[in-house]
Image 1 (cartoon, rainbow, N blue to C red):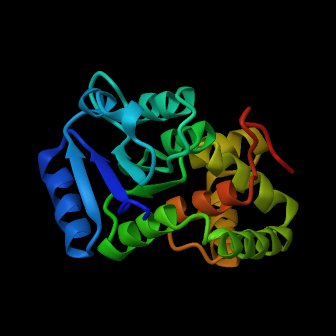
Image 2 (tube, one colour):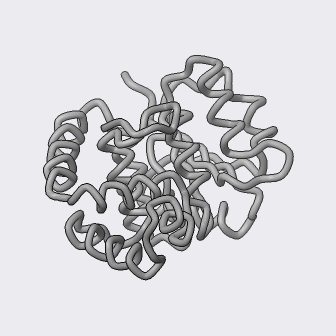
Length: 211
């Protein structure tokens, strides 16, 4: 008989961690919380299944460090990272290291529950993920070349004015392209847009365009 899946929540913010633990328990998900990555590392070698939900900014050992450790141990455990507003570049780095998903604060309950369920059921969810990737690629194909360039700048974590400088256009023009591609992609937020681009593999592990 398969053991009941366990979600490991790591966050040095007690209020956030306890809130997540309560939410998951209410949804009938078995959960165990840790106030630091260091505390979690003590049991990490024994972790064989389930998923990890970790804050990305923590003292001493960050969420990125935790991801690298999971990779070093060759553990097949999905990791969901939680980022603060404006941490898109960090979220992209986390995805390159191997994060299964990232959620930007503040996120609603259904968003975190959906992400956790997908991580816990990723094998059964393979067909859905493939269909989602195909749908995203179809939307990407409908973007103009300039919209692709702006998207790649956003996924790289660049500010509008930096993208404008790189492309030799005005920041206002970048805002227009950004609004257009958000509409074409059906993205509700910048983090949603970045997640789509990463799902489609728009960047490779070296941070260069995958197109």
